Length: 255
Ligand SMILES: Nc1ncnc2c1ncn2[C@@H]1O[C@H](COP(=O)(O)OP(=O)(O)OP(=O)(O)O)[C@@H](O)[C@H]1O
Image (cartoon, rainbow, N blue to C red; front, side, top):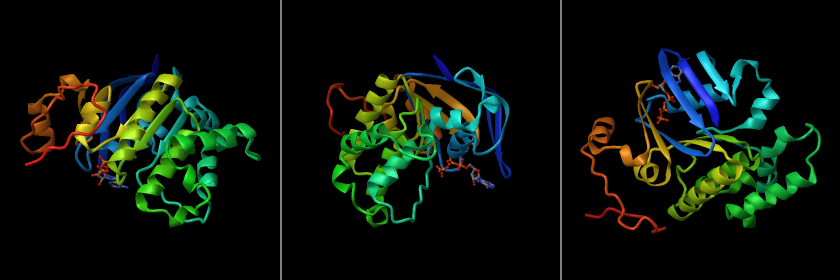
């Protein structure tokens, strides 16, 4: 099912302009957005979330985005910004619980919100942190907690801006596995800004490539070519395709 449809879509940030002629994203897809710094990845996620205005056509779950009321948008979409700052001394459990706020009556959290929070903390191996004050966590721990908060709403659409930056390799792998289950269980769409092209090629269903605000590529990982990446990255690029597709560990390239 089409969850997002864009036509002649444009969003501006100062003199920068993002332009997408045509794009459809469906439920059940884990999609990476790739591109160099300043290519428009964050601009795209912000425009799709409604944080910056757009021109053109944007249908969300079959409805004109501009005609959907805010509460419904927040129930359908969960957005993790690139710079998630939170200076207040809340404990980790409460920070993650607040991810459920759009599902409540805006006054009280329900027992199912508490239960869901326990479950997501457990799934992301954060349960032992639950009573710790958020500001005291390390950078990577904070990112994992903010990701748990974004996932806790169980929204059908997730927009995640560089959620794996600063996270250790073991937890990156666990998060990738969790996203796969999330997509399957909730028939969800997850759109993730990723700089690590190895990760994007190995774990995602579809890769979108932006350059100077233009969508220059939209491929499944098997169709991404070395010549395309060489041009995109600006460096000679080789793709090593794993022989053992069931291998769950990481591949490192040595000298
Ligand atoms: N408020 C603003 N005013 C003017 N230009 C802006 C503004 N915000 C962003 N830009 C410019 O828009 C372009 C796209 O920014 P965006 O944050 O979408 O890039 P990105 O692909 O997410 O980059 P990165 O990989 O560095 O996070 C950049 O060149 C940036 O300098």
